Length: 73
Picture 1 (cartoon, one colour):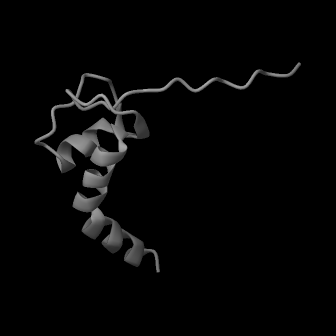
Picture 2 (picture 1 turned 30 degrees about the horizontal axis):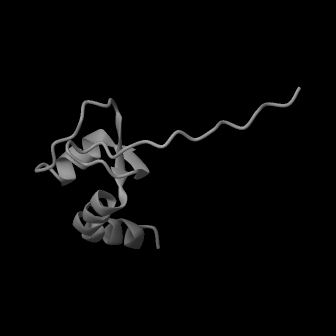
């Protein structure tokens, strides 16, 4: 018995007043601690982010990710 592939539903960004399509889904806890100025919708453990907000998140966590990658070497 073959399973049908799930159709992807287009989700919108989890930031209030942002109607862009989400490209990534991240931990709500991590997003809230990194970008406390953003007002997130009440979506549970994970929050979908659009390209623009994901870029902001990456910018803020750049140093942390760099240090983390150095510890692996």
